[in-house]
Length: 415
Image (cartoon, rainbow, N blue to C red):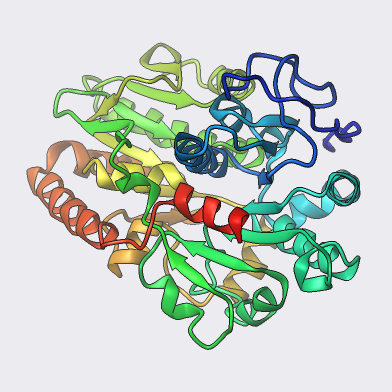
């Protein structure tokens, strides 16, 4: 089903004196008693749940140092809660893969046109793009071609937080990005060197999961349940959650006394989708509980996870598990031809070995996943192996940074 077209983006409006956005409608209508004075200091664009979270932390850091900062966002509710005027809630419309993007071309074209028109009309001092390269790099290119960005002769600075994974695929993009962007901040220390042969200023700002105020949402518990994390995008969930449930069903058939399972979801819409999929598995329906993502920590003794951001959280929490992934066959075929790395999970990529075995496409069979769960739940050595890898991962991500993301953002706005 195609995505709905975005309504016209609202104009920025006066920011409350307390400096924090209040509750209001999301999308087409301006929020009551929130927002920012025209022209705003920054427009932040985050198209995915994890990007929304990371951008929100960056914005909170910036507002802590400069409470009068005015920020607007095309992103999600985390940015809104952090203090931005939310112009359009893009996160629920996140899709991944060439086929899925082509299916929703009309939506993204309209969103692009209206975003460019909004920036042209309201002239934020900076546009901060968060990951999401398929849309964000095209936006940067449009702003240059239309003479809006500083790279195109205009007055709007375009900066980027969380680099596209050019070390995994399309490394040549770095040269084009140097022509489109004024600055880049990266979350992995080795990424600075990836841009060394360009003129793009690149700053290592640390990984969000190693921030002093960040608390892992997960922890290992030897008496806890099995955790299922099929992702935060509808298309991915529809393909991955049934695989997880089929593997779990076979495991329960072979091990009737096995621990129960849980799955957590970031939004009510995705929760309803999980419930709908789970209803097709009546034999295990009573052994799988679904919970909204909460502020408290979720405990688990084993995990089946998609390859997204939460898989890194799982690895840092030292929960034994595996990655389960299935994409549209056409998307996967194209991806295998252009991606130059052998692994999908970010922890596996960073450590250059599989701390989480990867079950991709047809390899994610019920038998394979059942056997993997048995290993995770019954082999003490697997837990020790995962804990050692977790410590190594923390060390890698904790390298001394130049500044925080919030400080970097303020530097770009002052420039």
